[in-house]
View (cartoon, rainbow, N blue to C red):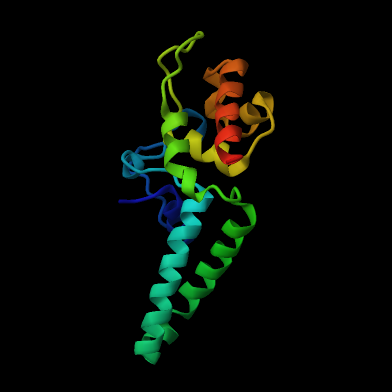
Length: 165
């Protein structure tokens, strides 16, 4: 399963993940067919994944010095990415990630967009970018433009309540 996090690694390597004639537009939630079934990851999830990968690399290094040399660049990139995630992730969110995703995925029960819900990319963007209010959220996450400010505030309130513990 391919995650949005890995997209940056694909771009870094020169591969875009877009098929012929496909257009990428995050504001319209269009990421290319390779990402149709992908789940956007929270920085907390990326951090946990990288910790696991780091443990695997350490075990490999202990068993084979030649493999360890080959993985030096990968380890460097992994360490820098892990450091970034550690710095910007939402503190103490790990136990509540499942609940947070479930609550933010629930369809709106009232308002002009009743029945609409946030997509995976929008949830990850709200949690990773931590906007202070609806206006800021809509400015930095263009795909939220279809929601009314009070609806975005509703999503932000859910995020704040769950992340507060």
